[in-house]
Image (cartoon, rainbow, N blue to C red; front, side, top):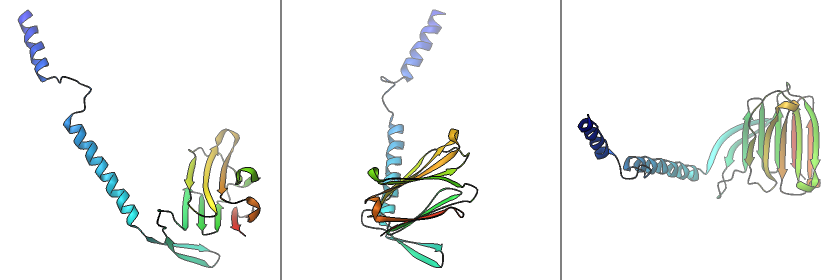
Length: 180
């Protein structure tokens, strides 16, 4: 019995590694392969100079999205949720929310350069934040306040808020903010 235990111990020790926490060659190969895939996707994204998109807004049609040198887009269309659409065109941002989610509050925070809009909603989701490299708008975020029964949209600007004009249509849940 002692000999059998000794043989099993020796057999197991022959197949074990010196440091079990040291990565294996197979692990390193997979890691390098994933890094190469990420590099190629980044390079592919940098190559894009223009994309074609159709944006219909009261008889206006924008047919191109222009990508700037630093990878920022001059015109942008984003759908953070299935019932919300945010469109950025140069010095104008437009927010359209489904009528099922009525606007319940609107705030303007001049000291931190933010427009804040609250909509009645019982949906729960993680906060979505998108940075915009634009001369007029810095970023926007959409967050759920599920326990309080609303969702909040925050639009951050780069300039003082008195230089913007906001047009709000509460019946159709359309908000448009234009730089003067």
